[in-house]
Image (tube, rainbow, N blue to C red):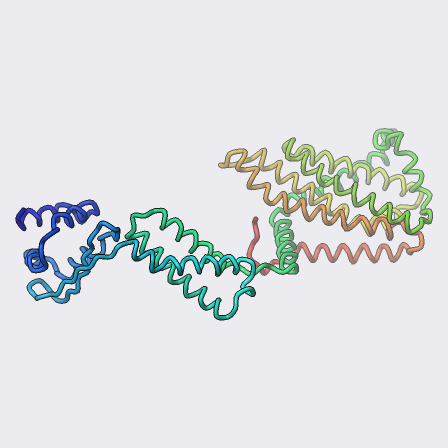
Length: 409
C-alpha cells in the first residue's frame, strides 16, 4: 500500500477511534523517515496540531503501539519522532501498590482521621490526587473496564472520606429543626388562621346558641358530659399527690398528641373534612363549657385554669388542624400537578407542622399535670404564666429563623 492510500484511509476516518486503530495497523513496518514524509504531505495542516490529535487519541493497551511525538514548528520543518511501547500491565504494576495503599488508608480514615498520623494524612492526600489523575487517564485510554471500575471505587471512597461534611452538633440539629418549623408555619399561616377561625367560631356559636336558645343545651352537652361540667362549676380543684400529678402528666402526654395525629390523618383521608370536623367539635366543647361557667360566675376561673397549658395544647391542635387543611387543599386543588405529586409536595409542610404541633401538645402535658390544676398555685400566677407562654410562642413563630434561608425539606 502506497502513501496515498494510507493518507486516504487516515483522512476519511474523521479521526475516529476505530480508524486510528486501522491506521496504526497500516503503519506497521513504516520507519520514522517515511512517516515524516507522510506528515509532510499533509498540506494545509499545522504539523504540531496534527501530531497532538494523532497522539492524544491512541489508546494504551497491551496490543497497541502508541506513538509519542516531539514536534515543533509548521509543515516543512524537521521534527524528531520517538516511538515507545507502553503495556498496560507495566502501567498497572507501577500504580497498583499506591491504589491499594490508598484503599487501606481510606478504610482507616472512614472511622476517623484521628486514626491516621500526620505523615499518613499527607500520604493519603498525595495518593488520592495521584489516583484521581490515574482514573482520568485510564477512562480515556484503557480498554480494561474492570481496572477502571476498581479504581473508580477507590477514588470515590477516598473523595467521600476527604470531603465529607463535619457531623452536626446536637445544638445545630435543634436550631435547624426550630428554623424549619417556624418557617413552615409562617409559610402556611393561612391554614392556621382558618383553623383558628373554625375553632373559636364554633365556640362562639355554641355559647351564643345556648344563651339565646336554652333548649339547645341538650345538643351541645351530652348526658355523659354532665358530671365533668358539674365538677368544673364548683370552681375548685382537689389536691393531688406528686405521684398522682405525675400519673396525670403521663396520661396527658400519651393521649393529647393523638388528637394532632388524628387531625392530620383524617384530613389526608377525607380531603380536609376530618380536620374541619375535629376543630369544630372541640370548639363546640369549649364554647359550651364557657357558657356553663359564665352562668355560675366562674368564667375567669375556667380561663385562668386552662390557659397555662392551653396556650401550647390548643395552639398545637390549631397547627395540626392547619396541617390537615394544607393536605385537604392539595387534595381538592392539585393545580397542574397530579394528585399524588400535589399531596407529596404539600405533605412536606404538613409533616413539619405536625411535628411542631405534637411537640407543643407534649410540652403542655407536664404543665397540665403539675401546674394548671394545682390548687396551691394562685389563679393570677396561672394567668401570668399563660401570658408569658403566649408571647413566647408568638415571638417564635413570627421571628425565629426569619433571617435564614428557607428550609423546605
